[in-house]
Amino acid sequence: MIVLSLIALLAGPAAAEDRSAVVCVRAVQGPRPLTYSGELVGKRPLPGAFKLPLTPAGKDICQTLLRSKIAEWKLEVTTSGFTACSLPPPTFGKRVYYRAKAAASGLKCEPIGTYPIGNWKQ
Image (cartoon, rainbow, N blue to C red; front, side):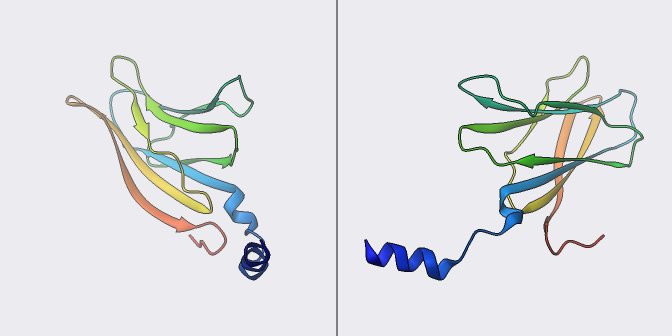
């Protein structure tokens, strides 16, 4: 028990950045309007759901997500007529960028980059 307390003391407090993540999506110019949405999925409805249009094309649309002990974030990019493109759950303490594109072959999302929140510079 003393060893666990000592390890926790040496590790120090968790960084404030580890309590949140920033997920950004950039739409590629295409024939269909895209929407970036997310919600906390848990045993009961939770606040924090959002739905953002990805306009104008080429501009990063970002959302700050807070960590939850009782739910997981479900993130996706949607457009009419295509199956939604799911984004992986965020790594907290990071700023993650994705590119989204609707083409004849379907809706595609791909990662662009990942950066620490505290030290990130554009």
